[in-house]
Every structure is written in C-alpha cells, then in structure tokens.
Image 1 (cartoon, helix red, strand yellow):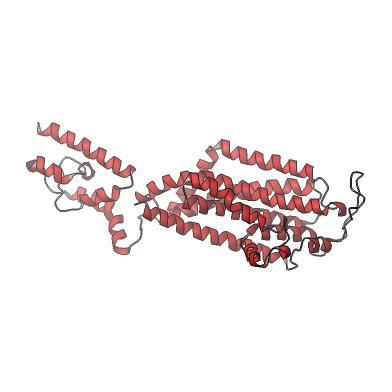
Image 2 (tube, one colour; image 1 turned 180 degrees about the vertical axis):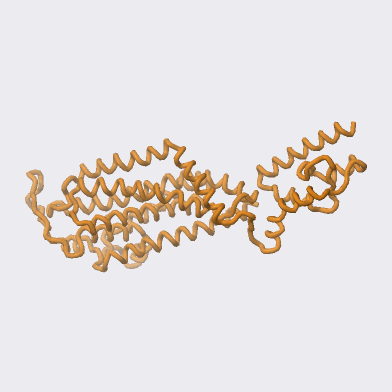
Length: 377
C-alpha cells in the first residue's frame, strides 16, 4: 500500500515539475526543495518530490533527509537561484560565450530550416532587383533621366528598409514567447540570446542587400567606379541593418497584432521626411527637426552623393523620342544634388549617422528584452 502511494506521489510531483518548467516557474519549485521542512523518499531523486509538505503529512514514517548525492544534486540545480538572490542578476554556470555559440548555431539552423521564408526573401530581392533594374534601365548616366534615377535610388532604399523590417516584425513576437519561457527557466541569459540573434541574422541581411544592390547597380548603368559602387552597397547594407533593428524594437515591445500595425505605421513618417517627396528646405520650420530622426534621409542622401558627388564627370544627354521637348538635360552632377536640396557635406557623415541609428536601436531593443523578461515573471 505504501509503495503504491509513493509511486502515485512521484508521478504527481513529476507532473507538477513539468508544468512549472513549461510556465517558467521552475525556480520556485526548486526553492521548495531547499527548505528544511521538505523531505525526500530515500529511493527517489530530489526532483521527484515537489510538494514536500503534503507528502510529509500523508507518509511521515516513509521519509528521511537528503543523502549526500541528493544534496549535491540540489546544490547544483539551485546554485543559479542563490546567485540571483545575492547579486540581483542572472548568473549561469555556463559562460556567456558558450551560451552565445550554442544559441547562434540553433538560430542559424532555425533560419536555414525555415526554407519557405528564406527562399521567398531571396527570390523577392532577385525579382524586385531585376524589375527595378529594367524599369530604370540605363538611367544612371543620362542627363535627361536624373529625376528617374533619383526615384530609383529612393525606391531602392525603401525596398531594402521594408524587406528587412516586415519579416522581423512578423516573426520576432512569436520568438519572444519561446525566449521568455526559456529565459525564466534559466536556460540562458538575455545577453546570450540577443548576441546570438544578432550574429545569426547579420549574414542573411547583408547577403540579401548585396544581391539586390549588385543587380540594380549594373542594370541602371550607374558609374563604373569601384569606390562609388562599394559606398552604394554599404549604404544599402546599413539600411537593411537599421530596418531590421527597427523591426526588432517593435517586435520586442509589442505583441504580434500590434507589431504588424506599428511596422508600416512608423515607416510612413520615416519615408515622408527622407527628402524625396518633399525637399527638406521646403518643410515647415516647426517640422524640419523630424527629418533628423529619419534614417532613410541619410540613406537616400548618402546614396545620391555616392552616385553624383565626389567630382563625378559630366553625364551624357541621350534623348529618347518619347521624352518631352521641354525637359532639360541636367548633365552636371552637382546640379542634381542642388535640385533636390541635398546637403553638400561628405557622405561619410551619412555612413556614421546610419551606424549610430543601428547601435542606438539595438541597445534600446536589448533593454526592452530585459524589461519584457523581468515583467513576465
């Protein structure tokens, strides 16, 4: 009779422990194991007895204290909790670098195995790149098509931004649920998860932006200059990274339903103050300060300077029969920048500002992750 009761108690305790692990409350149950009033069956593992007080009441003569092995096991399992209480932060027996390495491998495998999304993203960059390249074919060195070429540069920035923003906004809130549960069970730290997420996503973001940039640059007949080519690609890559950081911040701070709305909604003012639809000098004075918060402004201006700045030679004036006779040929590159009211400072400033946007958004996202993990307890 005692044996049957003991087996039933073990099964029920294991069920409670499993539920606690699933709900992120494993630390509370492990804490109960360390209380002096909890005693364990001599034939059981320490984790088999979760509800020690109830077991003590039902079978007081069948329980004794921990033996040496059981005490060592509980000490190992609860050492993390003691460190947390003493120092007010998470401490893990496995180091940060080891956690990050394992999590990076896992995240890369998850991205690689999600073949539908990965292939769609690659296909979208190739197809849209070819489409944009054919639409603005040979516009890069024609003085009659400077406005079209500016439109090409703007839509390239726009596409790269949204192609990195929206997939992140739609997938990261779902990943957050798994992260919160695993973090509350002390599987890994917030820092390890965030570093792994960053390292795993970087190669894909860079690769997709480069694929698009190479296709459109040559189809649109931009200057055959290696420095200009590399600057243009660098700006596209930075735009993709900033767009993804923007999406991570939204996805970390909100649930999926809200994130799907906030992603495009926050993108609208970023686009409006980029300087393409309305030049920055014609924006009302009380709204001009908002243009400094638009990273697409610096991406667009930097791309335009990489194409038309830095003492570029005079462009050709090849007029198509369909072009209006009144349309002037702007073959002087500096005149194009003046026409669009683009600041004359060096494009290096735009690169620096885009990097600042990237790091600031990433740091903000890290603290939002910390806040979400602490408020989910």
